[in-house]
Image 1 (cartoon, one colour):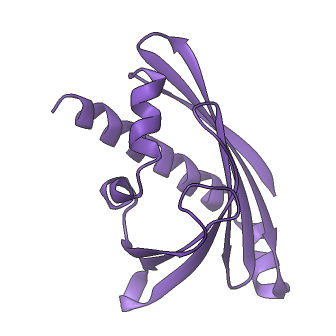
Image 2: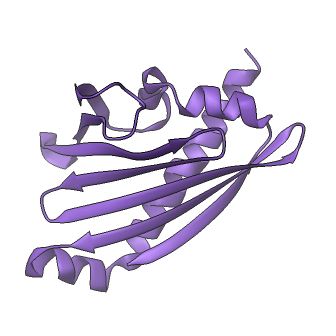
Length: 149
């Protein structure tokens, strides 16, 4: 499953990147993020890995392993996320629309393993798309609010 989203952020690209590329900010715009831990490599460098733990319904948690595939900021950053039955490649692009406006383009590719996950991906692609866009909106709101502090 492949799809993309775009969102305009009312901040200069440099400010967007400074907020986006700071792991300390993740909990401020990613609901349910309990913790993160760098596992291997230098954070932000290609090949580095991090484990992220999210709270799910009924007190359960979900662990994701993030791998930095490409970091060519301020232009682009590509990461992969792995959890049981799901592999996601996330390609993020940041373009200057004007001195005070940034366009964030996110391309998502999901690969599902196992019959259960493949069925969920087939029957509910809208849920994945909606969740991805929700995170973009939450980051935009966080970044624009943070800039006013």
